[in-house]
Amino acid sequence: MGWLLNLYKTYEANVSQVGKIEKSRWDKEYTLLPIAHTTQNAHIEVDINEDGTFHSADMIGKVNTLIPCTDEAASRAGSKIAPYPLHDKLSYVAGDFVAYGGKIKKEEPFQAYIKQLGNWANSPYATNKVKSIYHYLKKGSLIKDLVDEKVLFLDQNNQLIEKWTSDYEPLQGEKPSIFTAVTGGQESAFVRFNVRIGHTPDVWTDKEMFDSFIAFYNETLGETDLCFVTGEQQPSTERHANKIRHAADKAKLISANDTSGFTYRGRFKTSKEAVGISYDVSQKAHNALKWLIQKQGKTIDDRVFLVWGSDNEQLPAPDDDPYDFFQDDDDEQDVIANTLYLYANEVAKAIDGYKSDLETKADVSIMILDSATTGRMAVLYYRSMEKELYLNRLKAWHAKCYWAHRHRKKDNTRIQFYGAPATKDIAFAAYGPRASDKIVKGLMERMVPCIVDGRTVPTDILRSAFQRASSPQSMETWEWEKTLSIACALLNVKEGLDVSLDYELKDRSYLFGRLLAIADVLERRALGREETRATNAIRYMNSFSKHPERTWKTIQESLQPYQARLGTKATYLSRLIDEVGTMIAIEDFNNQPLTGKYLHGFYSQRQELYKKKADVSEDQENTQSEEQ
Image (cartoon, rainbow, N blue to C red):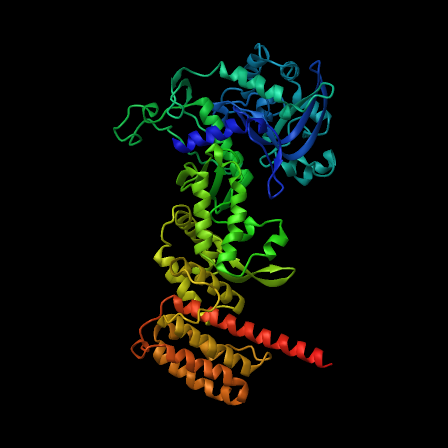
């Protein structure tokens, strides 16, 4: 119940945001829903005068609209008659639906709808807008008015056209927009109502309307029962919200609609004995969850990764990379330092920005949601911890899983940056760029405990990244460079090395990696810029990681023509091979497979050699300009 309680508290802390329309990163509108409300796509908007007479109507396409909702309406399916309280489909809100050819299966939906609306309009909580809509709709002339307004269309027999064909063009002209906007015919159109009263807000954005229905509906709720979340006696509910991830999502987190078979497996007689949740808590917790997912959740193949704070919902997520911390601050990105110490300071400063109100003892919640079936959803991972502890864990992760990367572009140029890779990039490094969404979301879920709880990175992920980084021949150069740096970052969680070359480190694997890098650079320089084929060091890299002594003999022999071609220009690199080679103890020069440190040695040595060449070129240019 902890996650429900935290979501409930989040709703209460952000109650001022209820009904306010916001836009997501994808320019999609969303809001923190009032309790007893939901959203639906409306196709037709009908304006009514204050005295309850028809004013006008328009086709509006598919517009997401906030509407009042009862428990029964939220879970209606098939032929069940359960009207929404105010806005609904044509078959519910039109009293002349049958007269114009509308087909109903059992009882007439309009009778149930108008009775429910009448109860609200005649209650002490009704607003003038509700009364106006009720007085208009009970006349039963909606379809007639919509036909007169050229919103709905009839055939030769004055019946609603079920499906548009070219046969109707002589009668109605070009295909009306309603047949494009609505799937399933005109009778499936969803109608929303507005009342023209001065400069008042639209009905679906009017807080007075929200409060009116909530007050009315609260009186209709059932008996009170113990709420397992708050521990209070409140009106309870067995129907909980769906549409959690998006409007078409039917999966529920809490559901118990089966009273036979193996439902409770002999433990409980009723679902209420298993769990009792009050209507108020259920509505607020689910609405807060929907709002947070729209606001800051990350969804991959319908699996949701969500992080929020009890005081300030915006927090860095475990799967963010350092660029997410420095977002919208280009100058700050440029100064991300090239040493572990300075980099860690930069990340610490960015994360400390979220610590401004630690005296409030705020909590952070991390949740992963997914559904195995269309009807049921599960909480795959949930952790709640103090905000300071969470931020310290993030800081520790970014300080440990640190390496230099070049897979990000800025102004169409690949740039080098330092930090921990995002978990999504780790998935592609471990399983390839064509890894399915199922694989990616699975790995991201497994990496979250490593970051949040400080657990060890799973061995299979490390092994897979190591093997792919040791197989450059199987991928394009940019992809291998990305895989190599991410593998170095992952393996560095355990090793704790710096990106810069460690001249003193005499680890066997590290030294073999340095040898491989020197051989690669020497051959590359001999080949020149025009020749893009892989060097022998790169071609034999995979074999080298498994049988270093035997493969090094092959690589070194293949170097001789290139050393001869370079002549004295190869002296420094040839001497460096000898120096590094002598650092390896005789007993260590064998065919025992190399550890991940050989990747670190390879990367750091190669970077050092490229840097030295750049320094030399710069010195030469400076010398030439001084001589001139």
